[in-house]
Amino acid sequence: MALTKAFRRRLPWVIAAGLIVFALAAWLVLGAGATAVETAEVEQGPAVELVYATGYVEARRPVSVSARLTAPVRQVLAEEGARVNKGQALILLDDAEQRGLLAQSEAQARGATLAEQRAVSLFRQGWVTRAARDEAVAAGQAARASAAALRARLDQTTVRAGISGVVLKRDVEPGDLATPGKELMQLGDPGSARVTATVDERDIPRVQVGQNVLMSTDAMPGKVIRGQVTEITPGGDPTQRAFRVRIGLDDASALPFGLTLEVNIVTGRHDKALLVPVGAVDSGQVWLVKDGRAVARKVGIGIEGAEKVEILSGLAVGDRVVVNPPDGLEDGDRVRP
Image 1: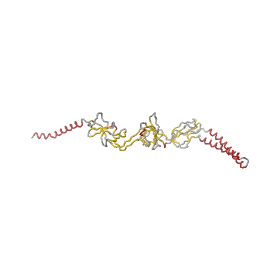
Image 2: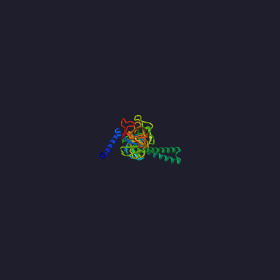
Image 3: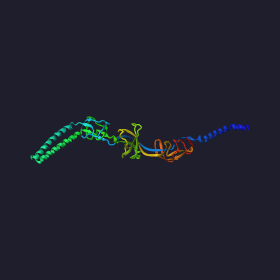
Image 4: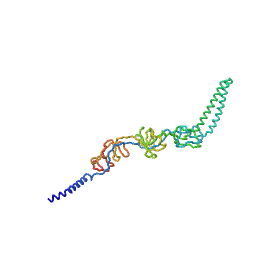
């Protein structure tokens, strides 16, 4: 009877000890041999495929400014970066010679006009022949036309802007000799600026006209500049192994010419993609964690990003996979997060 009472008093301690022994045995059987791994859950979200390039802002149609006659440059009226209006004077050429020629021509035109008027009056009175009158009229017209041509040539000593825009480049100084065809300045319209990007020849097959482009620059931290691919040059540069891609801007007015940009061309986008970390996929295979064990699973790969990979087949939302699986992991091995 005393033994029974003593046993009853010790029974809770016996049960507790038994539970501890059972838990320890379970840990030894189930957990002691399990490999610790990093896991991640399969998520659903947007997958974006990008082609990276570098580019710069340039004028869509730069306008070259040059003189139409040969003369020394007397004065330059616009600096690089200056905004100018169409018809605004940019460069003044030495016009002394042209003014002298015009004065001489105008004097001759006045004399020829007076002779024409006298001949016409005398013809009406019958004192000169029709031929004499016609000759005087023709001489007067020629003299006046010559003077008009010299006045137009004098106006050409003022070189004017052909468009409204910005002076992109100035290659002239007072005293330089301006000649026809020699570029003195270059103008561009900021409202029609574009970006020219250099794309690696390995990526160019994925680039198409109309694709969206996301751009950024250190000059504007945090700002995303948007545009679209408008043109792909048919000929590449064999030296750089690259092609030029033209990009139209949604808002070109805020970007200065010559600004360098980091360019990301969106070549593919899936809004409801299955995503896993890059480190979970190796040669088209992932390790799926199922009932505490690692299960090798072949998967279809879609868009591959810097951090995430799109899974086309083999997994479902909520599945848990091993990230950066340890060496030697085999199918069926026990694992624990």
